[in-house]
Image 1 (cartoon, rainbow, N blue to C red):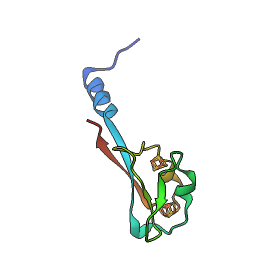
Image 2: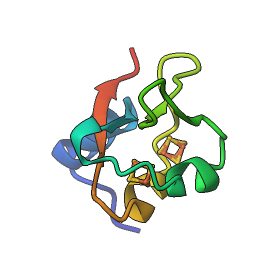
Image 3: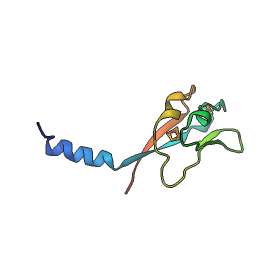
Length: 84
Ligand code: SF4
Ligand code: SF4
C-alpha cells in the first residue's frame, strides 16, 4: 500500500488538532428553533433576545455541523480553532 507523502502526513497531523465551534450570526437568526431541536448535544439554546446560540461546554461544541446544515437562514458558522 502506498504511504502518504511527508507533506500530506504533516497536513493530516495539523488538521487532526482542529476542532470547531458553532457561532451564530445573531442578525441572521430568525429564532425558528431548528438548531435547538436538532443539535445532538442539546447545547443550542435561546438567549435573552430569543436568538439561538451555542452554550459551550468545555472548549468546543464538537462541530458535527448539524446546526450549520439545518439552519434555513445560514446564520451559523463553524469556526475552526486549535485544540492545543
Ligand atoms: S455543530 Fe453540532 S454539536 Fe455543535 S452546536 Fe451545532 S449541532 Fe450542536
Ligand atoms: S436554525 Fe438558524 S435561524 Fe433557526 S434558531 Fe437556529 S440559528 Fe436561528
